Amino acid sequence: MLANKRILLIVAGGIAAYKTPDLVRRLRERGATVRCILTSSGAQFVSPLTLGAISEDRVYDNLLSLTDEYEMGHINLSRQADALLVAPATANLLAKMAQGLADDLATTVLLATDKPVLAAPAMNVQMWNHPATQVNLNTLASRGVKLIGPNEGDMACGEYGMGRMSEPLEITTTLEDFFAANKRLAGRRALVTSGPTYEPIDPIRYIANRSSGKQGHAIARALSNLGTKTTLVTGPTQQPDPPGVQVVHVESARQMLAACEAALPADIAVCAAAVADWRIDTEANQKLKKEAGSHPSPLVMVENPDILQTLSNTKTTRPGLVIGFAAETQNVIVNAKSKLAQKGCDWIIANNVSSEIGTFAGEANTVHLVTSEGVEDWPRLSKVEVGRRLADRIADTFETSHG
Image (cartoon, rainbow, N blue to C red; front, side, top):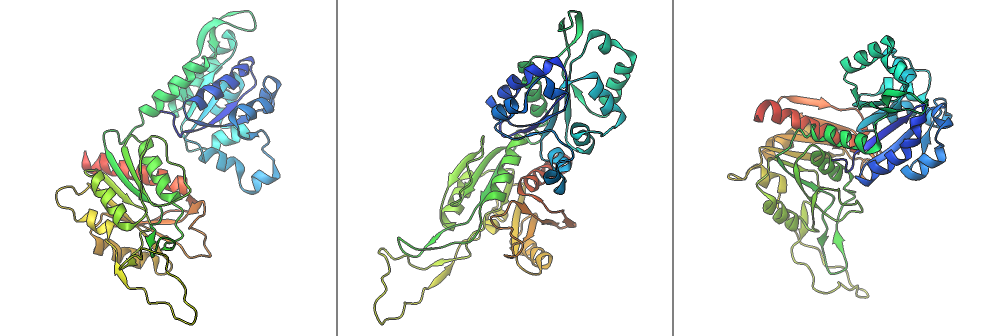
């Protein structure tokens, strides 16, 4: 359940912080990516070097880092995670969370986030039982913060009672259960296409495009994370296969169509691949040689099969929701609306792929969701975030319209 999940771990200043390197290790064993924020008091118990070595990522500790804050680092940290985990969550940090204070990086990130927050309290039994702490806990619970523990047991101060931080394995299991409960598309089947197609001219040369596959792969990951059984049909890319996704590697448009048809039936189809519209009529069996003084023979082109249109108009196995992409360089919305009508699909994701924008091969995308009901303009987001937002939008549709 933690495969490909991004956890932002906030380590506050309590003796239980000594457990956090093991917690990071347990989370990563299960496929999660862990990034750490270490408070100044937390650094008295565990070093940034230790957390950085185990997480294999930078450890963040300074709200006023000029480099990070130039790019609004506290906002990006809070939004790039699938969940925020506060462990140990001291009485002091819980009180700040309840009051909405933001006087360091940890509290600023917690106030700026729109992602789920889980907290593993750790404190002396008297601090745990204090009415102020209990009021703060009730306030946080009413805002959706999920508490993990604490446990009852011996404490570093020599006392016994409630307030001992849950063990790393308990916290990890709770996170797994949390994400399992959020499998909004569990039981659904999804088909996603990604990347370019290569259309051969001869054994050496081919016709292709600049698609990197980053967006299609991100969509496949996001749908899988919501519980779908996902098949990703991808042209040649440098992208790693998403964990938990069945991946079919192809080269040409005809191979891609065959793989898509083999993956049916499906509830959802997202055609994000940049499929070549044309191919060579007859592929040469041998390398086409350049002859001295001669002119190259003209290449006779024929139209490739239209995968989006084929899936949209398949009678017996048409997916319940068919989504296409419109990669445009001008008149983006107008052309996307026209494509929606021509192809017979349900939605079109339109984006501008002009070279000066850097969408192809880049990490970010600005898309417009075009449906029969209108156009939704999404802000510029990372391709990972576009994938997650689209998956959530699909889940919303199935929950309200498809049962």
